Image 1 (tube, rainbow, N blue to C red):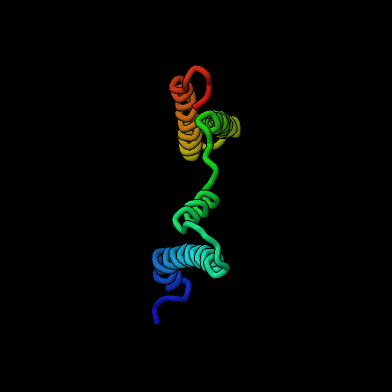
Image 2 (cartoon, rainbow, N blue to C red):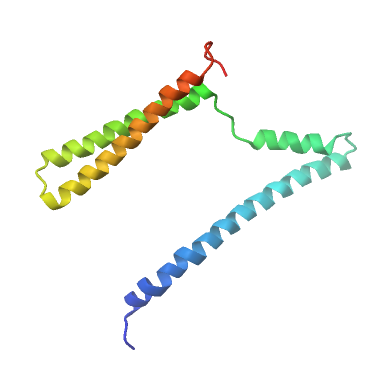
Length: 144
């Protein structure tokens, strides 16, 4: 036998687990949760019908969906999260560049860390620009 177990694991088993087992298990978990949720809804409706309640099933399902859905953020809350994320990323990118330059790192690794910091800072600048553009699109009274 040529290879060791480590070679077998890194060349065959790890890719199989990452590309096959992980996605299949994620899909299975999502399907189980949806199935359980649908079963719970149908049980509630079944018990209501058994008790003789007069109800509209379509309206009840809509009420279940509304109760389960996430609360929607307003445009102002969305923009606020953009500016907070943008400033945080800009400062993090500048900090990476500053720490890299001040640490006296060799030339080989310096460009990689500076490039990483620059990309993070540029993403932050983009989010700040998105905040200001979105703010211009808001109505004058500040509401949606």
